Image (cartoon, rainbow, N blue to C red; front, side, top):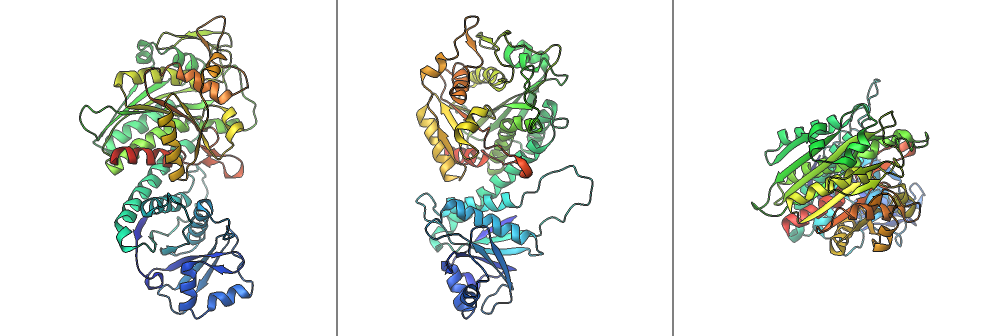
Length: 497
């Protein structure tokens, strides 16, 4: 997808189609009013006849209106003027792209009314618009054998109008937004694959492919014997029930100053989670192929950093395995030893993500990181707390946690900070080991983070629980691409100051 920014009059822009917004109650947006004047009142006449309501999610394609350089005009509903905000704006962009993708239109001018938002300067507006349109063009990488529908022909989009002085910022935003969209496609494609294809070895191969694609990226994957030498007893405990061998993937991106402390990104890579001996309900267990979305996010973040040549140093750590029942699988009541020497009593084998992450977090120490961020589809409790709308953020550094929340707000990839005080850690006490891996239902998302926090002392660390935001369920089952937009904003801002 090629994206450009324009200034000046919208009606003077040349393309196959012009897209403008219409509010409910027959209210034309700013650019729609200019189109109506050029078309000698045709839009107002259409609205007065009741041919288009302006409700959010609606669209109407018109042809051959006078006064325009485009042969077609697409009207997109914006909802009420009082309720128009960034969410409706992104919905309007998605509606427009979906409508255009069903036609043979190859180029469009997007002049949809921009919402009022103090964070929405020209750069953020353009980046969000490009990322939203790219997301709307995504097609699931299914394995169906029938004839595939033709790919959308839409290839060029102009966004505007921008003030002349803001064009440079808008163009930079479009470039970053396209990169985020392209990297999110990598994330979604990997996450959507079934567990019999996307295995730990497959993830390791994807990391190796990144290293072959970008000179600034290095990759290596430790096998089971090498993991054992690192004394990663918690990771090895989780993988025991599976015939698939685990991997511990290490990625490095060197784009910053030599010797500068890196940011370490850790991603949970359970390529299928049956729950182990504490087996899950059969209902929707197929969705447990998405339990490696944290790992896919780390891969996508490295792809993004390399695409944009970000001036920072990154390390990616991906502990990856399956969690399966079997004769060798860990059992409730078993005690294992983590890489940092702490003993862990396994009270629930379905609380496996925190086990593989704790060994990875300990490994992060050797890099003396500027900050550590882990991403994991960790707890159903986070879904109960925040639904599918916000990613849960917790950590031992409030400034880092709030920085991530602010990044999510700018990127329309929202997150919410949950408390992580010492009381939650006390719930993990057990008579038989240094710590238990679960602490009951109350505050489950936070006690999971408290478990991880035991392995991050001395490091600035934040945990992103993406269990509710990483994929869609039901008829629209697919990876969402989150939290890459949030993480992309964080990395870009850290790299460019």
